[in-house]
Length: 95
Image (cartoon, rainbow, N blue to C red; front, top):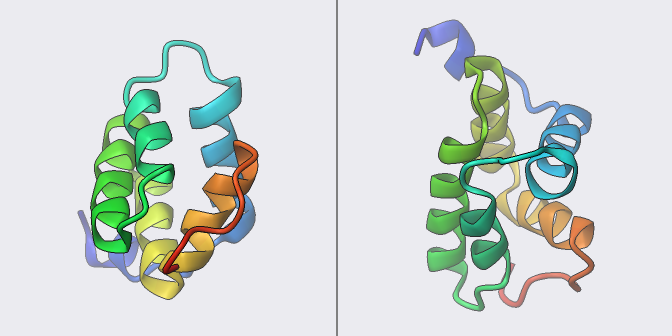
């Protein structure tokens, strides 16, 4: 991945659209089950690691994955809770 992609600013609207597609709207999304399982985990460290793995499996273009990483670096709790809200869960414990 280029330095430009890694240095990208967090685009929260895009990450929400991407998460909605991965979790709800997309058809045959590889990694969807991993994301769902991760969002339901109670341990923050395990949850973040599993979310990163699910995102890597689900997001198919470099820009979407770079934005996910930028959001995860900027505010991991916000990213987790955004995903949890999309599937009807309350904010994450320890987030």
